[in-house]
Image (cartoon, rainbow, N blue to C red; front, side, top):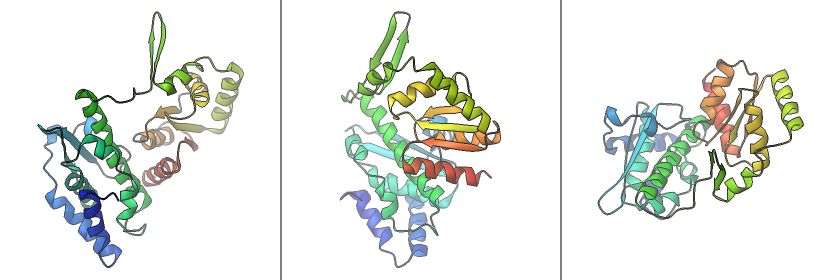
Length: 260
């Protein structure tokens, strides 16, 4: 982990003799977790894709420094929230955004004590903190690259961000390719969850296909697994295709397994 408060805390946990002791140290971090009132345990603060219900709330103090609070009924998840609260509070939003999710592996707990699904939940918690930092930076007037978006009005389409500019070129993908994809997915009962940073060529086809086939979901990494569970449990899908990076597919697989 980075040479920061967070890095020092993670190093202290990792220094324990064995994984069991490291888990105990991690759980102990929940004791210093600032209280998060029920009113702040909202959907906006919910950590999506986490095996246990968890929430994190990020605010800025008078000097523009980050303050992190969190909550979870699961002790080990609350412990990781405590790690983030102690390690990130007092940093600038930019410092927080520079933190790598390698911090989870750096705990040195291992898959026996920290299953892949829970480790991915920890990464999602860090990503939720970063997401809130981005929003706070924007509100505070900090200039950041525009979030990829397509603004559709009666006068036309306005693209914001380089990715959106490329995506705008694929608002009308090849109709035959779309129809072929929909037919294949329906015949084989396949659902698709895709990260919204996929190539615009793929995005264009998926966006058009989603109008004809309901089991296509494009989002950020935090809610892909939840959508996959709905496709299987409520939509009758027998397979899920994950379009994204490795940890996203691992998280979807783990959450599906946990959901039965």
